[in-house]
Amino acid sequence: MKKVIVRYIDEAWATNVVMIGPADEMIAKRELAGKEWADKEYVLYYQTFLASRRSGLVQDGVKFDPWLETIAEVEPRISLQEIEDAEAMGEIKSAQADFLRKRVSALGDDVGESQAPRS
Image (cartoon, rainbow, N blue to C red; front, side):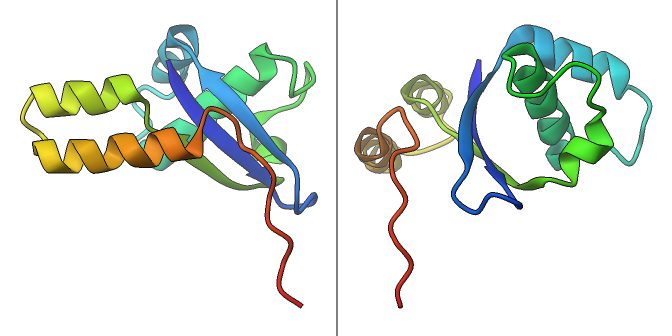
């Protein structure tokens, strides 16, 4: 499962934390198969849409394109397990893994409160 933060255009302070599950990944892979224009970012947005719809954050009947027009960004959140896996596979060094663990621990599991903009 992947955790992502969804930020919306219309509501500057609105964010949702969404968990993309294996079913969302499988459906996206099937529905986007053969579409050469569907790059990694597009696939992530589509998976986020499916997960949001499954969790009730998007109403039934809402299509992907109109939903996408309301999104400012989708930010993937790395998990401690993903860091462990990358270190075990030799993709990152021990020092990098330690740094990432500290960053992930400092961020916590939730989005938290946004800081007020400077005036």
